[in-house]
Length: 118
Image (cartoon, rainbow, N blue to C red; front, side):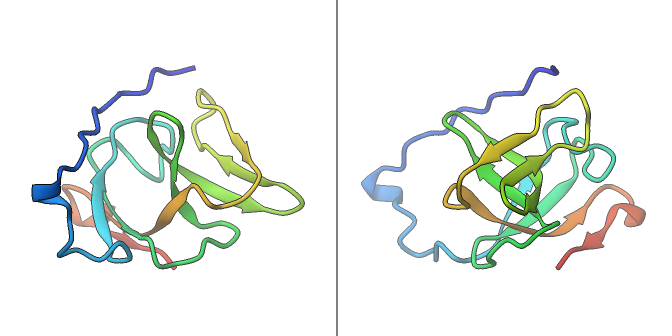
């Protein structure tokens, strides 16, 4: 299994509580690993919309105990978060409560990397 980069998450203090931002507004992240290669490459920028309910085949941002990961969601009898790269494990989940949002766009250094989802 390939090693996942860890990025420290700092606590939000009362001076910077994010009160001016809506929890349901889209936000951007940078891809840091190869778990979803070739769909998402390192340094691609993705837009996540937390207001969208995930459906089968969507790319989602999922929160584990110690990290955030991108996976394709497969909803059937079970819910599976599927990695495209065989060196990364798929994850079976009970519900979508830890899914933080659905990926709606991808961009990179070249125009050919730009793509819209949903």
